[in-house]
Length: 147
Image 1 (tube, rainbow, N blue to C red):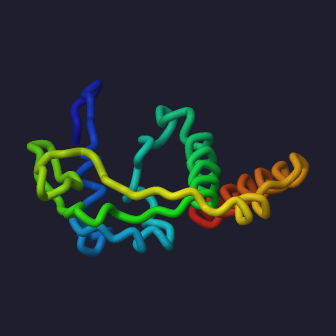
Image 2 (image 1 turned 120 degrees about the horizontal axis):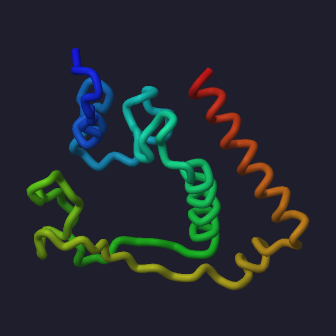
């Protein structure tokens, strides 16, 4: 029991690497995000009444930005990049093992051919439909996650 008026903090870093919720938590496995995490096991924006006010906007903005980047570009890791995890004193971070503690990820980015871009460009009315679909998808995901 915490004393009255005590400041209580949560170890978010530990929670988000708890083997109870995350299989092989120290491994880089993007496929784990193909399904919603256990409620309360991933809190990147804090939670509750004092959580980040911009979290919903940030999620939608992230989806739109990623969709735009993925539509218009191709990505591949630099052939010389050696991916690994390095402990930096506070936690583990992804790093180029040839240059420990580097924070950069080297990618080769190429623009897609203009014919593909032309097929992706659309009049503003259809972009509004895309934005509405993204917002609807986020709302549906929230309803599914939180019942």
